[in-house]
Amino acid sequence: MASHSLLVAPPAALSKPLSIPSRLLLGPGPSNLTPRVMAAGALQTLGHMHQEVYQIMDEIKQGIQYVFQTRNALTLAISGSGHCALEAALFNLLEPGDSFLVGVSGIWGQRAQDIAERIGARVYPMIKVPGGHFTLQEVEEALARHKPALLFLAHGESSTGVMQPLDGYGELCHRYQCLLLVDSVASLGGAPIHMDRQGIDVLYSGSQKVLNAPPGTSLISFSDKAKSKIYARKTKPVSFYLDIKWLANFWGCDDKPRTYHHTTPVVSLYSLRESLAHLAEQGLENSWRQHREASEYLHACLQGLGLQLFVKDPALRLPTITSVVVPMGYDWRDIVKYIMDHHDIEIAGGLGPSAGKVLRIGLLGCNATRENVGRVTRALREALQCCPRNKL
Image: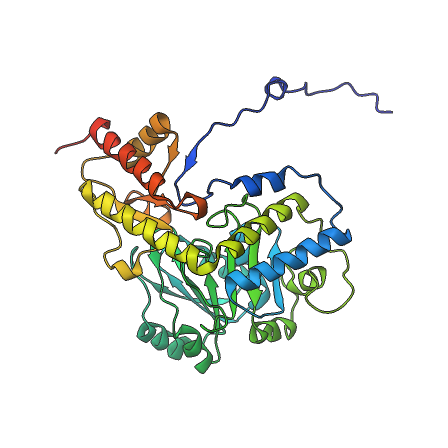
């Protein structure tokens, strides 16, 4: 038995009961949890290698195949947020010296570039100012010039509110023997995406936006072409935790007996399973329509306040996250703080290259309602009346 006396006393803060405020999360994520998901999170945990948990994992895979619209066998959930899924994709697809073309129109392209540089890939960024997107012609010119093994595009660029078109990009990439990697963290369930029909080779998303599940798990799927590249690697991926060969086995994707890889967040898997079940019961088309109608109503209300939408082309506006130009003379921090302090509603400022330029309002999953649009519109109107304004 240790003879040392305790150096650190029990924290006084931990003697108090946990207190969580009631708050409407209308930022870019996370979103509010549905009652069904919260109930799942209150269930008792099981062992991560129990047959019942394997069954839940299998059902999660089927749910991902539905929401991604893919028949890929190599489909699973990652024990980590969307960042983790991005790293899983890049760590497994890229080897040192591989050529990587990345669309940088916001923070997620910047992050993809950063991660790939750490791996030792030859990274070629296509850079757009915030609010921009990449045309087929621009992508083809870059494919011809750099001959990349992989192209990254963010379908939903949450830092700017832009929805990148995807039709034709997969076919174009394949003509140049390039794989297409797409980030759908901010768009999945809120805007149409068809992994197989759009020729997307790797698609990933997160649990905490339209799915209304807790942050900390993410969804990913690999086409046969992407799987072939992974399994033909000359070097091991830099991360054991995110090694897709190991994860494929643990998730039952390789028709071999499952072996232990890591301890999954079992209770989070319950919640993810229930969130996918809810979206499957609602139907993708109904969810897409819900987000489109709610965002169009929000746009009209914001313009009625005299505010300017950051994304000019309606066809390029992300239905889940709306970016608004910070009104002249206001500090965006004052507006965000006023709405939080006086209305218990979260909205956000910009992120990365959009920081200081925009306010961001999220209508994600169960939060995408006309009632919530009315609440945030009234809160914004009051904030614009009460927050200080520099008229110079």
